[in-house]
Length: 45
Image (cartoon, rainbow, N blue to C red; front, side, top):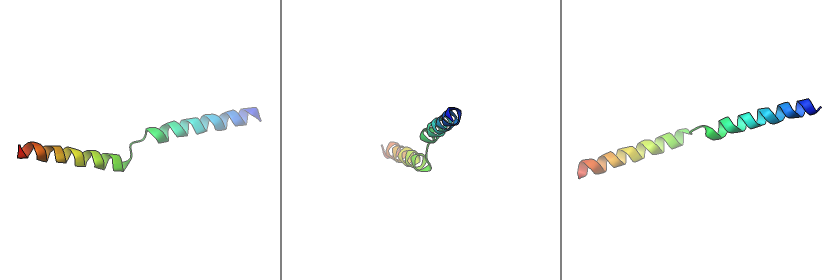
């Protein structure tokens, strides 16, 4: 029983680490919008 609990704990930990470290599509879009806004500001100056 303890071995099964340890396996589930390890799997949960690994899945949490990979899920929390993933960059979402919204973050990528937001970064792209900010880059374009910076480029436009530079072009206006």
